Image (cartoon, rainbow, N blue to C red; front, side, top):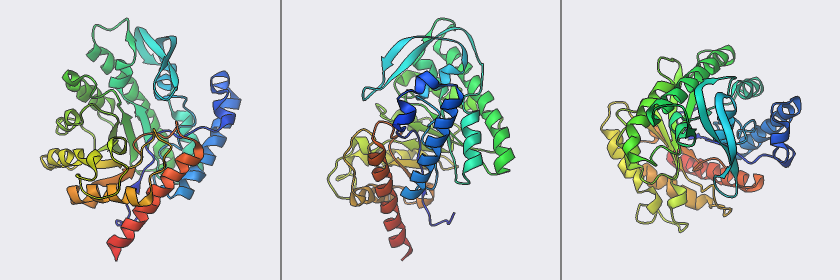
Length: 348
């Protein structure tokens, strides 16, 4: 990839076609599930390519129903007690930890291997983080929240090691990109030390990785920026568009949703090894499709603050699974076209 190209990354889920979503739980784990998830993945990969994305994530997470439940399904001693609502009338089964947890099967091996066999594009493997898994589970076994978070981090570490072995088989020494998804990270500000400890343990001692953390809808990103020196990740993929205005214009006076980019820069400038920023530029919770011009304003606002395009990546705020396939595609396409316009102007 040219040094002049921004990384346009799909950082989470995408809407499943009806033939997969309508009976997902009924067929989960069967050959029919694998065939339909594979078909949906190929369709989504083709759509991402058409939209101009150059980092495909894992093709929209077609093999996963939801970030918590999919993980919990592969863990020993998590019992499901019932459905809870996450957002947009989407539900998942909340689990309770009733004994010492361990991995009973790989979380993502089948999904990753299928993608490695079917695309040469850049991939990034999202894995639900240990702190979020702890926070979203009932705890009937471990003495405290730290102990349960660290138990989940051990499962994640085992998973990453297995995926890394698979990755080497297909991609050689190309770095494996791991994105730890931690939507709960800043919900309990007094526990940021648990977030740092458990996330760091998740890939401790594993080489050949590029690591990032994805947090969205934080009560205050400052809690996350404060631990930049301690959290051993190379990048932060964050949501900004959801808190921004739809009116045009550059600069934080016109783009209030991007004021936190200044706080990121201040924290990032204080460390020797700079972290990259994955900039959310399209809101995944509205059907209104941001114009190319609006997305351009958002990106240029961040560029002027950071003053270093090398640490800037472009992405939706989060996964697009709650939007229709067409709306999601158009949001990605406008994002891509805005970047192409910026790159054209930059290279003139």
